[in-house]
Image 1 (cartoon, rainbow, N blue to C red):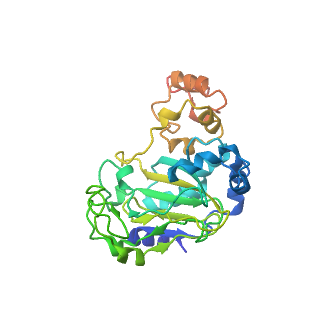
Image 2: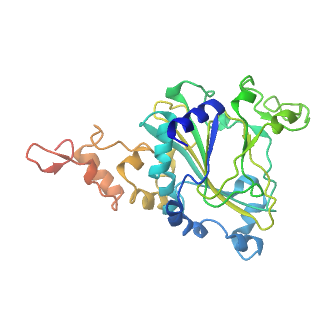
Length: 315
């Protein structure tokens, strides 16, 4: 599928499924460190991993947030192929990554089946827009195969939901009454569930969708199943009302320092680091950032004075 077709489908339906978009070579370094974050399938199902209890309370307890314990997984979240896809879908090079999560699910841990919903309530202060300059992008990235029994997301084309209002946001399959408030539809919408599309796919699959796209998580039914994915969110830099996490709040974690030391200037710019040449960079700030991140090569952020010496912008 060529990039224009991918973009057209994403805009028309609100989502596109790209089976095996990431090659095995891109996944391998992160997969090699996955057990530093999550139990293996055997470790969970045989009860030999003490971290098992974490996954037995709530479906969202299997989420880790960037910076990940695995530096390779943090780097995968801003890898060239994923960033290139985000640039093509959002039609801009000036991007921000506003959330990155890794998620482990295990058959029998909890009920992962969800009602159809949109994510916009946790992704923007406003409501989704079709204005090209302000669209936001969500991506599910499969680190392993996610066939139908492993809880793939199901999604609804905008052709079936374009006339639905901003509220309610959750549409259960059957009647639930008024007990959940007016953001949950009181009557069931089985016709919507009949129109949903499965996002099942092999390792490396990317499901790209928008915060205004109706979708849902499905149940884990395959015996001894384990599903490992990432949930990544990108936006144009100008859409500053679209946020989930404040990266500065996490920037003194050991995993953040390990990630920064291996990231490129363009990868760091996705989090808000000014690019080389930005007026923020002076002799003082270059020196200070170098002290904060002693393992980060600061040479890209330095500039050359009239004499040719490498100095900060004030030099």
